[in-house]
Image 1 (cartoon, rainbow, N blue to C red):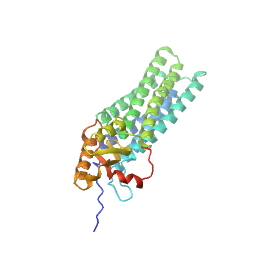
Image 2: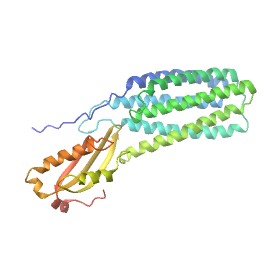
Image 3: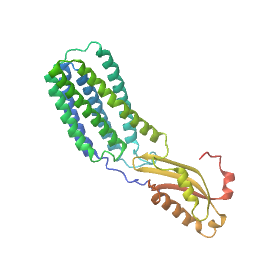
Image 4: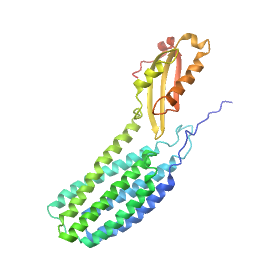
Length: 306
């Protein structure tokens, strides 16, 4: 009987404990800031609250994606749900973009006629938000580079911490000077902080979904190095992509001398090819698929562009 074996591909733990703690802190601060935004009427606090709402939603999506990533591969989904982290990060980037644009439009509209905002009350709620975001950042900081999912979550919390700081500064200015436009400017600053990071995260996640080559892996260099192996005559139809953070894959057709299939060299060449991509380059590709073929096989292949 033929048995199909789906490898676990080193399933990550998803860092669900950190995400759960960060979500709990963020949700608690969100409730406090909703009350503050209603009581003060501050644009900066309102924007920071909306941003915090997207943080809470983003962390919830990240937590759900981390849970999905634990599910094993199957006959239908041979990589399991490893790309759930990428999809969650993409969704968070999209939400951040929407919030950033809203902040800029609303802030510009309020510059002409800023409403009165009570400075002392705004200080209190700004400090609450800042303290909560710092706590959430501390929870996520240790593993923020572990995958795109955690990186997106950390970026959202870090952005909101800067927003809360802007709220505090605006509140102090209003309390000391009575200059109400400080609240509007703080809101615009939050929007300016959101957009660049959202665009960068969007670019990275889209690159993964388009199956671009993993950052730091030069396929021309890989091809040149493989061609230096004994008996390798040509390398073509090479593809490399990133399934999820820490899971690069590569495949290629490798032409070897016809005698390699009669003297036993073919099996050894396959070992060398896989060892090469797993150990020689800065990006270690442990999951590789090589088709070792004689030069006469090209007549049976469709034209390729890689």
